[in-house]
Amino acid sequence: MQQVIIITGASSGFGKATAEMLSKKGYTVYGLCRRQMQDSTIKYRQCDVRNRENIRTVVEQIVAEQGRVDVLINNAGMGIGGALELATEEEIDLQMGTNFMGCVNMCQAVLPYMRRQRAGKIINLSSIGGLMGLPYQGFYSASKFAIEGFTEALSAEVRGFGIRVCMVEPGDFATGFTGSRKNSQPTLDDPDYGPIFKRSLAIIEKEENGGLQPEVLARRIVRLVEKKDPPLRNVVANLEQWLSTIIKRVLSGNQMVAILRDYYKS
Image (tube, rainbow, N blue to C red; front, top):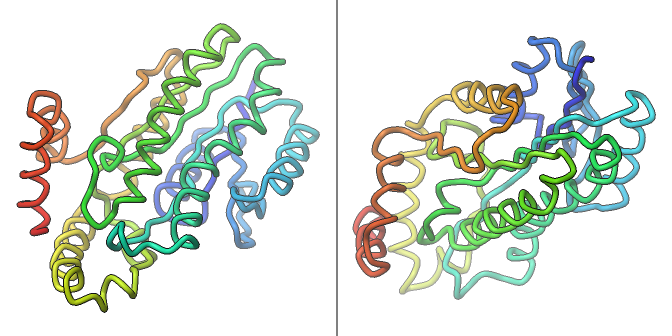
């Protein structure tokens, strides 16, 4: 039976590349995104992952059309740069609401159908920033740390129902994420934080713009879709960043913070 796949944040970057790759392989792919899109092979649906009612309606429509949901890929996300001290309530809500609660909302919407099927797969997009706290991207890291804990716990809870849960932890990739990042104006204007943030941001953007192509990550996600029992954690990054995740396991917390401060000139 042709598998039915839902992927969020499918209008660009990782989401679009993954949706296109899966569609070419013959899967029935529903791409969820906030703006209207048309495609001859991907079934796009307008949906805001922060809106639980919107999600419920869209998922119900998909199940009505296809009779099932086999795979959910939680890819929707965004980034806000700035000092943690100066983050506004609105910025925090937007960052955590999109990246973390968006993932939670989607999982809660599809899980009843997957439990009924006694089968399904959920792939959550985390980040290397979910393995180490990145300076001036603190709430982005917090949202991804939250996805790490949520995914690990969810995997344990639903495995007995035949549902497999895993996550992907990308390093730097050249996508539209860099250009769409929202940067804190109070941080930029602050006499203490401003100069340091600008210096760190230049490093962050250089690494992202010189990063891997989104198709690299898309191919890994396709393999996870096709793998019967995928590993819980899957780092996808260049060699240097992959090694940093290994090093973090053996260094003390203070040593890792010193490395991050030096790398990001913070």
